[in-house]
Image 1 (cartoon, helix red, strand yellow):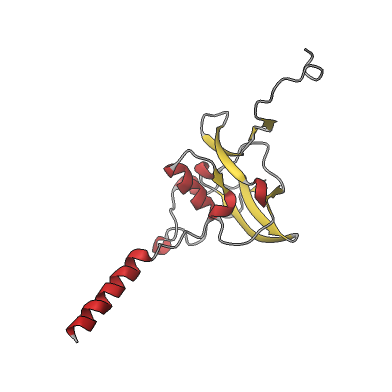
Image 2 (cartoon, rainbow, N blue to C red):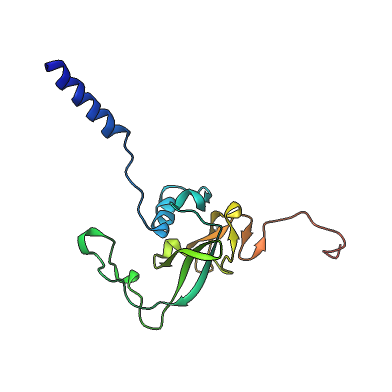
Length: 162
């Protein structure tokens, strides 16, 4: 009987060490957390817990402040996360089969994307890298793109005027 009690406690301890904490529900919070841990590129599908075909980032009016901000530790409530009337924010959205499956306002500056904003980016091409903004802050860009231009390519004599 004593052996059974120790065995059960061992199973509980093993289950506790194997269980991974669940990821936050917010895709933007995952982007912000990724940047805090690493400068390495991140594939957006690894940060999403749902199926999607392509993603886009749009610019839209900020709308209302976050409801229930800070209640029960749901999310931080700093003034930078509470948009003012007339402010514009970026909105990250995902679609599958021409139907929106997820959308989230990007209120944290560490989650913002560089201009031009990504539009209809297929899942297979959704690798993000950090890139410097004109104001010095780090923004998200698609890998292979920096502020709308392709990353350095070899010169082409006839097209480049050489």
